[in-house]
Length: 172
Image (cartoon, rainbow, N blue to C red):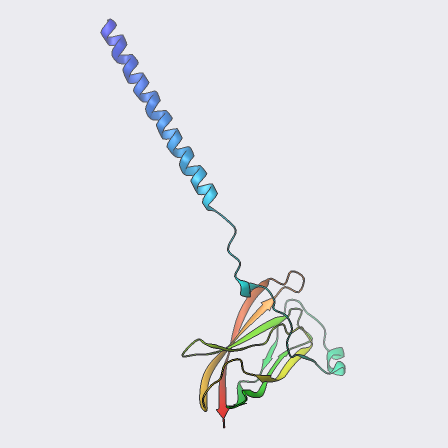
């Protein structure tokens, strides 16, 4: 009978040891999982950049329009023409005064994904018409995309993105 008691004690000790090991493992996995979670990394481009070359839109036109935070209207001319030597040209982008959100527009060449111009902040009621490209391009026609980032006016954090197709024309 003494042998059965000792055997039973060993089995009970093994069960308790296995339960303790399992709980320790489970606790370790839980702590690891909780520590791994962290806030999403904020990329530098996720905050509204400073204003660059914007102009105010005609005040009479602004007075007729009413701001509606649920709506967003982008006005961008789909073709832009630039001088090869100076990089200067006309690119018409307007953040309508009826919008509640500032925007930032990055123009990139489709086949290389190279950003050739970034507007900086364009607040509602402002527009850009004449710019100088940040990257030189050779004479020709280029398919491009305007990536329009929309920002929260108070926090300056990015709220969303939309795109518009464009054609960039470089002349001598």
